[in-house]
Every structure is written in structure tokens, then in C-alpha cells.
Length: 112
Image 1 (tube, rainbow, N blue to C red):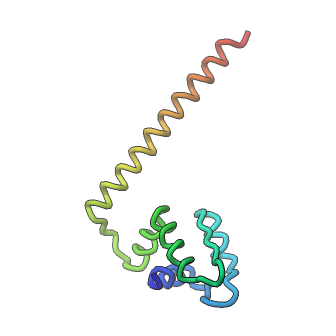
Image 2: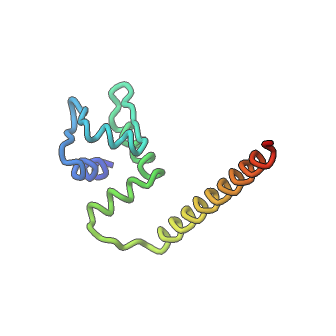
Image 3: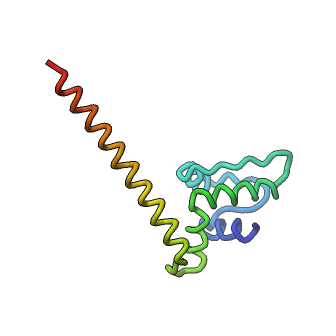
């Protein structure tokens, strides 16, 4: 758990643990990636667990690991997962484009 947090700090270089964590770079990147974690009741361990779950689900953990290892090797299982996600994303985008195209054509044809 702490290794993930340390790797994140290593990437951003200017964040500090404890006290005031209001680094403008870190906060802007978190907003850009959409990751926000609240520490409730001073329970930092639980907040780190939640952060790791969010990072895993958004794919940021893979970026952090890749940055720390300086390698480009992906396991075959990771390649399959990424290929499936890319295929789903592409199919969804094509389907949306088809729907929008048909809506626009209907509007154009119905206008006098």
C-alpha cells in the first residue's frame, strides 16, 4: 500500500506526506484523472486502500508501476484486457456515431 503512495510521490516529486498535502500539481492531476479520496476521522490507512482501488480501476496504477520499473513489457493477460477494453470503447464509439448520424439525417430530411 505504501509503495504505491511512494511511487506516486516519486512521479510528482513535490508532494509530501503528512501535514498539508495541497500541492497544486498533485491536485490538478487528481482532478484531471478524476481521483479524489477523503480521509475520514484521521483514518489514513483506509483512505490509502480506497485510493489504491480507485487507481486500479482507472488504470493509473499500471502507469505508476510502468514509470517505476522503466520497462514496456506487458503480460499477455494485461494485453488481452487492454485489447478488450479498446475494442469495447471503439464499438461503443462507432455505435454512438451511427445513432447520431441517423438522428441528424432525420432532422435534415424532415426540415422544409
